[in-house]
Every structure is written in structure tokens, then in C-alpha cells.
Length: 190
Image (tube, rainbow, N blue to C red; front, top):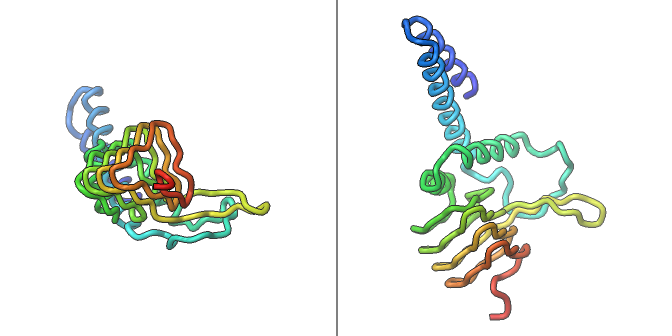
């Protein structure tokens, strides 16, 4: 995939130099082709990594020894978050396996295939739906992967964080900057 991007950029450079145009226009053309190539590479990587690299569970974590696909997938998602609009991100999350109803989505999902967001739910800007986390337990690091469920009509406030295994009841409102702990239901006790 990277080879394709380099080929496209090389072709654009040769084409831009063969035509007699101003240096500013040539630079703009090369920049546009490079950005388009990056978008194509990122989307291709996301579609390759549609399935979860690891199934939900609790794993021993050794820094620097993650599966190679993990880094590539997380890197592709990070680039995707920066380059695609909110509406476009929602479409890509659906193609990556997220179970998302017709909603307004402004937040970010780390592993879309492990997220389930109900119909008419609103995920506020800057909020994070984290389906994986690294935690210290008994002197060792553990990688935790679990589903996150947001019920129908729920509202997640700006900059709120939902940790792996958390569930938000239908119609509930998670306040801004609130953290829903791992494996908990929000609101509790109802």
C-alpha cells in the first residue's frame, strides 16, 4: 500500500514537472496528490483491519510486543480521525464493523468493531469510546478488550470517556467530562 502511495506521488511529481506551470501551482498539485494518496492508504488499511486484531478478553501486555497489526490499525484510525469529517468518520466506523444506529456522532471510537451505539444516541465532541485499555494489575500490565454499549437515545457529554465493558442505559445522559468505569452500567442502581 505504501508502494502504491509512493508510485502515485512520483507520477504526480513527473506530471507536474513536465507541464509548464508556476511553482506554486506545481507545489499545490503535488500536495493535493500526496494527501489523496494518504487518504487512499488509510482507508485501505482500515478495510484490511475490519476484524478485531484480538478477540475481547484480558491479555498479558508487554510494551513493544504488541501484534504488528495492532500498531498499523491504531495508526490508521488516528490518521482517519484527523483527516475525515465527523459524518465521514461515522460511515467509516460502520464499514469497520461498528453497530451504529442513525445517530449524531462527534466522538472517537478506538475499535469500531467492539462498539454498539443505539438509535438516536448522541456522542458529544471530544468524547472517547474506548474498547481497549492498558492497566497495571499485580505488577504486570494487562491489555483489556471489551464491548462498549450505548443505549437508544442516550446522550454522552463532551469529553466523556467510556472504558471497556461499560454500558450506558437507553435514554441516559452521561455528563460532560465524566468517566464511565470499566465493566459498569451507567447510571448505576436503576
